[in-house]
Amino acid sequence: MYAEGELSASRASRMLGIPRAEFYHLLAETNTQLPKKT
Picture 1 (cartoon, rainbow, N blue to C red):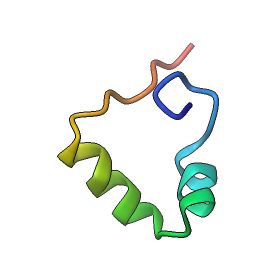
Picture 2 (picture 1 turned 45 degrees about the vertical axis):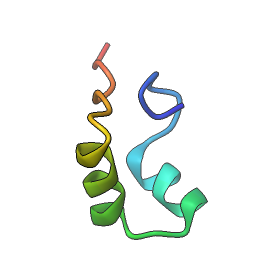
Picture 3 (picture 1 turned 60 degrees about the vertical axis):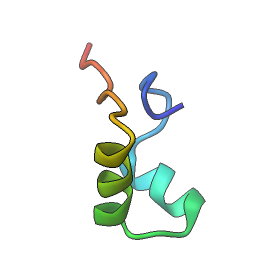
Picture 4 (picture 1 turned 90 degrees about the vertical axis):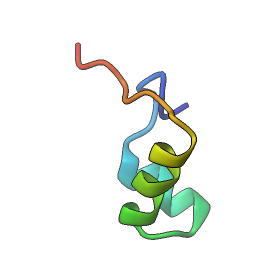
């Protein structure tokens, strides 16, 4: 949902119960694309 732009990084990290910095680290580890700005 984050990669499709449906959730913000803050919301996604809260849903996972982790800090936003850790969420970004997970994105980098899994090569998840950042959502495109529209």
